[in-house]
Amino acid sequence: MIGGDNELQGIIPNTFTHIFDHISSHNKEKIFLLQCSYLEIYNENINDLLNNTDNTRLELKEDPNKGVYVKGLSTIIVKSITDIERTMSKGTANKHTAATSMNKNSSRSHCIFTIYIETSESKKEGNLLRAGKLNLVDLAGSERQSKTKAEGDRLKEATKINLSLSALGNVISALVDNRSKHIPYRDSKLTRLLQDSLGGNTKTVMIACISPADFNYDETLGTLRYASRAKHIQNKPHVNEDPKDALLRKYEEEVKNLKNALEQLAKGGITIDRLKDTYNVQFEENTQSKGNTQPLQLKNGDAEEEKKQRERLEETLREMEQRLLCGGSEFEERKKEQASKYKEIKQKLKKQMQREKKLLADQQKAAAEIEFVEHEYKNIQEEIKEKEVIIGRLEDIYKENINEINDLKEEYQAEKDVLLNEVREQYKEIEFYKKLVESVMSEKDLEEIRRKSLCDDEDNTWKIPLFLLQGKQIIIPRLPKSKGKK
Image 1 (cartoon, rainbow, N blue to C red):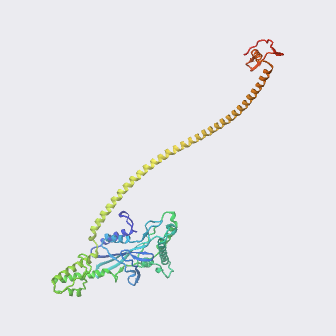
Image 2 (cartoon, rainbow, N blue to C red):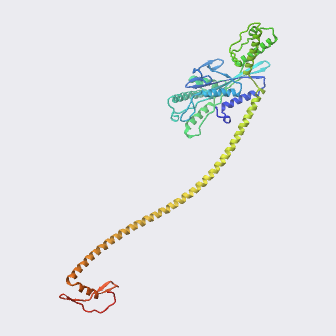
């Protein structure tokens, strides 16, 4: 509803521009009076956002001519877009907002910014007065405690918001249902304030805000059903002509009386007291231009006091005329400023588009580089995988070889143990025979027999000569010579 900066203005600021553009399209003979008010419904209490110095809770009243209205709600006369935007900013700063799990600046109240417009146009039969108002309503969104994690005051606020939105839905349903005899406007402050907007002499537009996220599916569906019912409301508005309580009529009469009074003063021959009685002139007590807050006390025949009063009348007239707006050339300068402003915004948007275009090109370039790196990385990853497979195979072969070496070591150790045992047995056997030989012959005889013995290298056998043992003597007969080593 409010939007952001100049490039992303919301509905309310654009409405201000539209209204003043419409005023500038008329001629100077058509006079406009613009007022605005700003209120919020917080926890079913009505607060004046333009006058929050005292925390007075305002009450709803109903009048046959005015309809439902807020008693004591302040209204401010505005003469330009700057005035009305300043007024809205002041009220927005006083709104109740708080952080929830869904929104760090969640609105905790329903807000209504109202623009009151009165027009006066000269016709042959007299001045034609028309009056209307525009309610710009910013509804707080419905909330689920499971999503917002609201507790304490936040939960209480959410409950009140949901109740008032539910009441609004019931009113809409009753208005659409032709069989319904009762419209439950009194179920909430919101529906009472919007009674004219929903079923009265008005044209109404509802904008439904939905979310594309599947997380908010239920809320989106509920909002669409809400809006679907609302669009079937059929009103037949008519123009409010010659309203009895038009402030513009009162201002026009005062301006007319002031002009007549000044004209009579200029001609002379009439006293100030006579002017008061004849033209019903009310002297302003709160003139801001000179800071004088007390009315002047006049004495008949006092020329100095009459001069001061004349100046006071002229000043009051200027103030009254400044409250009224005339169509046409009065807004040409503002339109030029606005055109310059739009041109500046257009240039900003153009530069922003160029930046975005460059950014997009840089992103595409970076994406191409990332794709190349990812491709190279993929190739490296595939190569690493292939080498990991080869390394795995080599590790398997290595493990097999290690196991085989261990097996060979075990076999070698077993064979070694067997051979060592055999060597030990043979050594024992040799020792036995050595002792046996030593017991039957001398060492000299043994050496003689060894010397005459022959070893066959082919089959590794010895040929020992025959010998005879006679007593303690050994007789070795001669043997035929054969090839081999001794």
